[in-house]
Each structure stands twice: as C-alpha cells, then as structure tokens.
Image 1: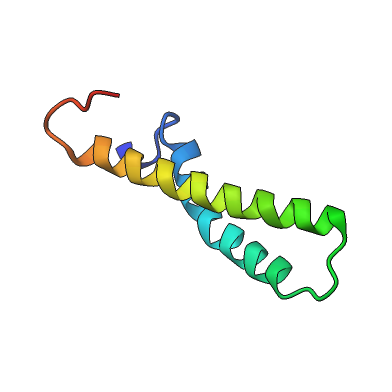
Image 2: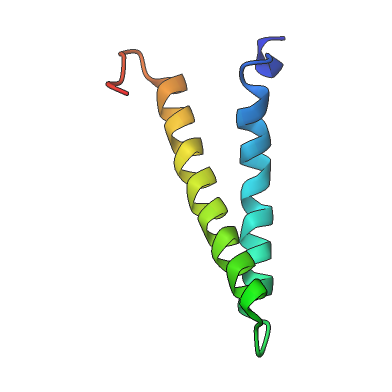
Length: 71
C-alpha cells in the first residue's frame, strides 16, 4: 500500500485543500463592503490556492518523471 506513505500524506492533504481554497476565495470575493480583515483573509486564500496548486504540479512532475529534475 505505497499510495498512503508518510512522505506523501501531506501532499495528498494539499491536493484536497485546493478546492476549499477556491471556495473560500469565491466566498470572500462575493462579500459586499469587506472589512480590512476580510481583505486579508481573501488575499491569503488566493495565495493558498496558488501555492497549493503550484506545489501539487511540482509533486506530480517529480513523481511521474524518469529523470531527475533540477530542483
């Protein structure tokens, strides 16, 4: 059962978190008259969505390549 190894569990948690960051961003985008704190949360949710998507792409590139990537 090599699919759920300890090394990959955090990556799969990040994959699951991507749609929730998207929903959170959509929720904060639709709020009328946002407070400063809601703007901060909105920008953090966009950043989390972007970072999780980027690191998920890197994870799948590293997992599915036969040669060593330079990073």
